[in-house]
Image (tube, rainbow, N blue to C red):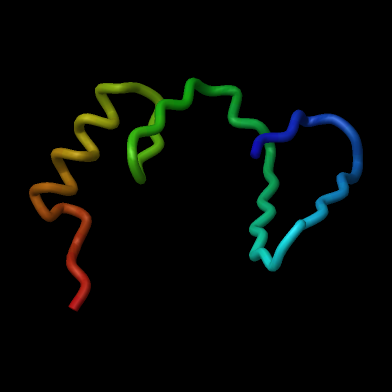
Length: 62
């Protein structure tokens, strides 16, 4: 869920048991492109991130 950068508070009500993560920060004022777990500024950067991931450049977990 996205909120506009207005106001000083909000109310959230869960109709059943829930876990909620609330994040905030300054607006980026940049283009945003999302694909799967990747969020970049352009489709070219998304393509490069997927390529880097597939080549193992993000590292490995043991």
